[in-house]
Length: 267
Image (cartoon, rainbow, N blue to C red; front, top):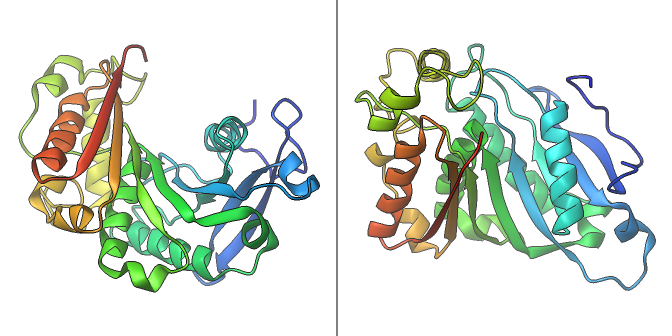
């Protein structure tokens, strides 16, 4: 299978159609929209929930066209069902954080003001969740944190919560799971040293891994509670970042955020 998948009129097994739209011609960012084909061809159908999705990248690799991201969004759109807006964002080291967060926020403002018929005709803008995997989950959290302070500016888009899958966090001190699993038990070549290198590329120059972009416990998590969003955190026991993910979820709970976390076995 190619590492890149083009937008298509139909994914035969799932009957999902996709297209790519440019948001910003200067930054060359955009979104890939995934929608069930039957939604476009049926009349009188109830509008679908919206998931704004940020793919995993370590902040240095992948795009919306990456096959793993494309197929995952197809699966989401088919099985929920929902409309998925998969967001492209600029990558390090050319574009260090917070550039990816800027692109995430810009995408949300594009969603709320777009005239694209796939969204205006078939999406329930009052039922939106931000979702991300790995670095995309980090982006979903930080972009969400920003817009939580200006929710009125996003109307009619209403974000109801965050879904964070194996969020990519870090810190200067090592957690027990990092020492036990950091040699690569979770996913092939993704080791603790690779994670450190990704943060070296992605963080602002001279920032340590205890910067809030990497270690969210160093920042203000209060705005998530203030807007009443629910948060779901999922992780794998075999992920060397699992202790950080659990600490993050427990910290949100301690701050009064309605947070659910789910751990699964396997790779």
